[in-house]
Length: 189
Image (tube, rainbow, N blue to C red; front, side, top):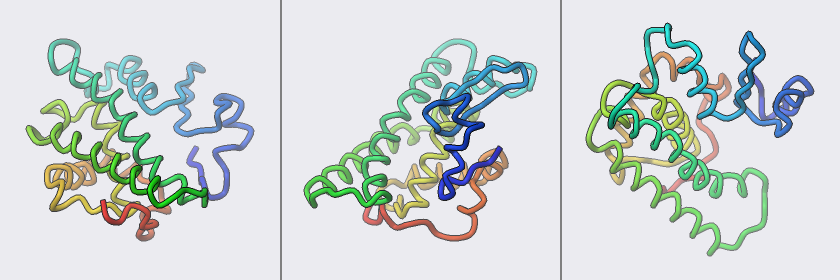
């Protein structure tokens, strides 16, 4: 089911029944298994359906460690993103100093991710992994909310272009996000 945040559809009874936080993603598999966080959903699907032919988590070695680390590390970027965007979306009071500190925290986090993607096409090298599946949508949302990655983060800009060109990423983009630019809350990043 695709939900509209603007219409509050993520709080409808069908979602609240399986995810009392009323957040998305909320994955309900055919067998009744529920995964309510992005990382949990990606890791569950990869483990549950290994026969799909494309594993998102390498099964051993450094690539496995990097994939799992980056998959969980995305929470840091998400927190920095939300710190900048949510107060503006919800018209919450904050001082100019608070807003500037949050914006700097996002810049610092983006610099970390710039270093992560500097060495290869994807976060764990090749191929596209679970880490990319949870990182790419957040990076693309950061751009949608007004961040300009180049020239400060050239590797992230190139990564974003590669990610956006993937059919799996393009197919998961919310329909209303395809209709035009989002709010410029992150202009200056």
